[in-house]
Image (cartoon, rainbow, N blue to C red; front, side, top):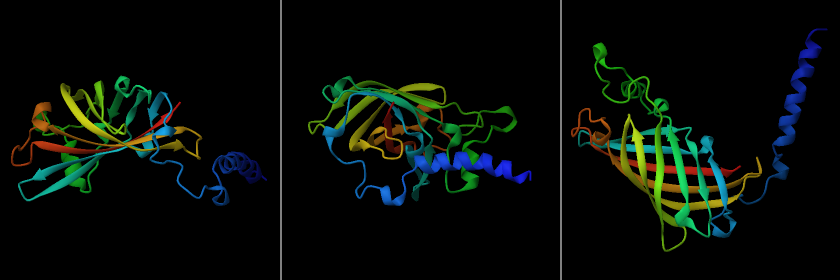
Amino acid sequence: MKAFPRAAKLALPLALVALAVPSFSQLPSTPPGALDKSRVTAGTYSVDATHSMIAWRVNHLGFNDYFGLFGQLGGSMTLDPANLAATKLTATIPVSKVVTVDQALTGHLLKPGADGAKPDFFGPNAADAVFVSTKVIPGADGASATVEGNLTLNGITKPATFTAQFSGAGVNFFNKANTIGFHGQSKIKRTDFGLGFFAPLVGDEVKLDITIAFEKK
């Protein structure tokens, strides 16, 4: 007799989820996003944290490169397609959630320093990195831009620049949000941010590959 009320309590939330998510028969035949600048609307957007990430790449001892990933990005963008140069962007990168494919390597990145010394890399209490744009230079094609700004990482703020390429826009059928996507690339020197452990044997230059989506709120 006591199991029925519990089942009833679960039934309503599950029913609401089923109503919110389109069935396979309702799914569109083409992706909702397309490489079409006319779909971009002016306004303020928030980062889609689930589908935005930054991959980093650094050379190891001159042999090969290895990779890591920052996910669950945050931030916002104010954009007007009629005045791209006025675009404002802020992004937060949760450094403490860095991942690699090797547990020992990830642990080393977040390990505290020995006997109270400075950590080799980020350490266990790494603050989020923050990028704030100061200038956006639109490309001649109207679908790319160079974004200049300031990056705060490991408590140090330095100028940083990345290139951005428009990759799609449209309305996400799952949440009905106007969405814009971009791919980007950048390079930074880790020694600029006090993260120079084992440089230059482990490369100083870090290549960043950015994929990010923004949802209009």
